[in-house]
Image (tube, rainbow, N blue to C red):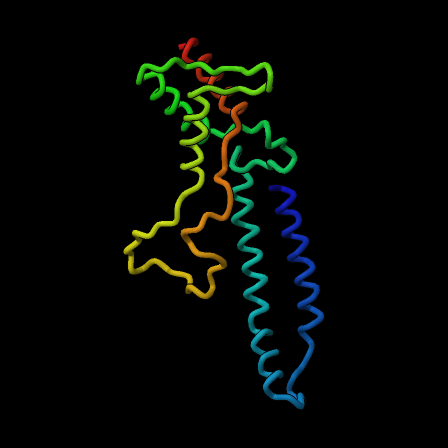
Length: 185
């Protein structure tokens, strides 16, 4: 955030220099009154633009003084960032599965080197429905904005591809985490 504030101040400095170059220009003897008028209108906005940048810098400065407000994730390996939403959904599935009397287990096929079982199939199927929402035909809200039919690239009720599926390895890893968390309670 400090680097962003510095870049914002640099931008304000560059903008100020540009405005100082444009400020002495005069349109009183222009041969095109329409464009001269437009230039004059822009000229009146220059001060507001500088004030807006200064206000943005001041407000970001207050935020930057606080700790743990924002984090730069651009260098983070996103594969290692936990998907808390997925974990919570799978915990509900695992709890439900166990609650209806099924064992919390998976099978492993040594011939294909794949994990399998009813629990993994159930979790994949249910999460695919959650991750691939169907277009709603029941929206009766008059305030809802609707794209005209001619602007739609394809019909709304036709799937655009396979539903996203959580891999069996991911589900198995979350199941192990779930079991360990339950044992530590």
